[in-house]
Length: 203
Image (cartoon, rainbow, N blue to C red; front, side, top):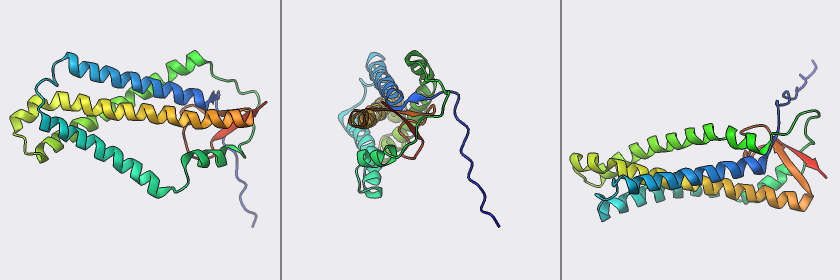
C-alpha cells in the first residue's frame, strides 16, 4: 500500500508580517491596560481598597503570572528566541500571488481579537478577585464593594503583561530579520505561534 500523500494547506487570502502583527497586538493591549487602570482610578473603585486587599490582588496577579512563566521555563530549557530561530531558518518562501496586508488593515483587524482577550481576562479577574478576597477572610459585603476595583486592577495587570509579551516576541523576529535580511510572514492571527507556520521573504 502506498503511504498517503501529505497535502499542503491552501494558501491564505493574504499574509501579514509577523513582527507587525505582534507589535500591533502588544501596543493595543498596553493601551487597554492603561485604560483599565485609568477607569479604576477615575471611578473611585480603588479608593475603598485597603492595604491588605491590594496585597491580595498583587499576590493573585503575581502567582498566576509566575505559574505561567515557570511552566514555560520547565517545559523548554532552550530560550524562546533560539526556538524561533530554528523554526524560521528552514521556513519556505511565501506562496506566490498572495498579497501582503497593509499596515492600516492590520491595525483594524487585530482590534476585535485584542478586545475579546481583554474581556476574557476581565472575566477571569472577576472570578479570581472573588476567590482571593474570600480566601483572605473578607466579609461578603466588603467583597461586593471592592469587587470592581480589584477586577479592574487585576485585569489591567494581566493585559499589560500580554502586551509586553507581544512586544518581546516581536523583538525576536526583528533580530532574526536583521541577521538574515529577510521578512517573516504568516497567516492572520498566527504571529507568535511556536510552530512552522511561517514563510520568509528573503532579500
